[in-house]
Image 1 (cartoon, rainbow, N blue to C red):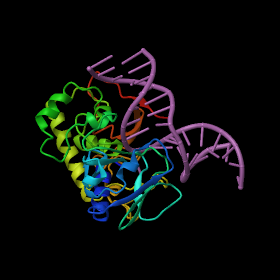
Image 2: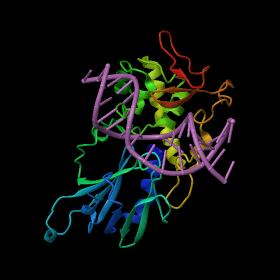
Image 3: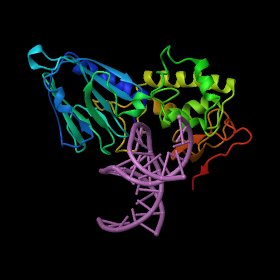
Length: 284
DNA sequence: ATCTTAACCTGGAGGC
DNA sequence: TGCCTCCAGGTTAAGA
């Protein structure tokens, strides 16, 4: 569920509830997927940031009398189905209590993770350590992206690795590749293809953030804001979840294949595979 | 080193 | 209604 636009929307929505507040407790069932959360107790939240699909709560150093002089971070990954809620529910996994109230971490599938670490110490989180540039920042450069893309394997799994650029997941990879008119299994992108993809990623991410992310209608994993509000970008999906429907550009039915173990949607007419490539395993 | 695969979990949808 | 299979927004350890 949560890719960069959903995580960024979450950050913007819960920051006013948490910034400047003191964490009184962070409680859960003891699962090792929530590491060292007790270290957050008594700390003040100085701000929230985001890196790729990871959310960071910055925890200011406690008063000198309390010992540990270092700033800490509470790193949160929403996994496939994680999200914050104002109200407790059947899938509440973590309860965050501040001096202003409570916020609940809802995560039916339990793929979400939290960890309190010394600020900036991301050992044990290889994806975060090897994360590429933020797609909407100046650090994301077309020339460098094109250079890497020229040597890459199948483009979609490559994007999902988080290495060439951060925050792209299954939905926005499919949508970006459709806009750039590139087949998801294409390898070694030509310079022009990489340029189109670079701009498509920036456009899609920008529009999706502005729309508040995508909320899919599949029940359990349905992404929602903390107050239950839905995103609006799902209404603009050209290919994701549109199997069999006409391509908005040419009318050809959208096709679904499995690539790198992920459902992959594309237009077989607009996104042709260049010579010498395989098209992945056709599903069904 | 890099790429592929299975595993981690839960529950909703659809077929019979 | 019940049972079964398939599927899902992500990451990562292990294997080739």
